[in-house]
Image (cartoon, rainbow, N blue to C red; front, side):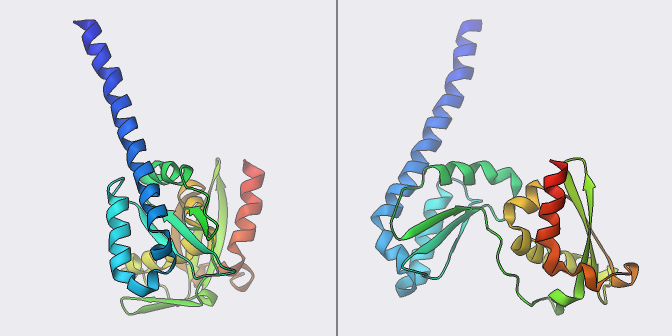
Length: 214
């Protein structure tokens, strides 16, 4: 009886693994079959995006995607879990099976991009020039304090949503989830050297500190 139980425990995870790998392969088979439609998705954007999301959902409903514009005859296809760390393994597994296609650059996790000058959400607008930062090493991660002009604690949830967008863009999805420790918000009145620590300089200083502590 004990031997039978042990066999079942071993076989079930293996079956799940093979099943998952099969779904990953099926996704890339579908992608290659529809490669031209995907590359020119603007012709039928809603239809293509719905089909693509349906294919991703077969692997993990937490997976999302981004397309870049066409540059030098190529498009970027970004595979993401929308900043949810617990689903990073699905991103890694899908990316690892990506085929080599001449017109595509496959990227895992949303990369660093140039941040928008301002973001507005639920009636609150924050500009890049209105945010300063402070970095504090915490073991092998970095805690971030963000100082915002005209910050009001009563609207903290809205500020958090906007500032996570800025951080995700400036540091990239992976670094925000894996290298950042705590994040705190404060009024700009609580920092004396506000202009010298504008969030535009965040990525460079963040990388410098992270490389020292790891």
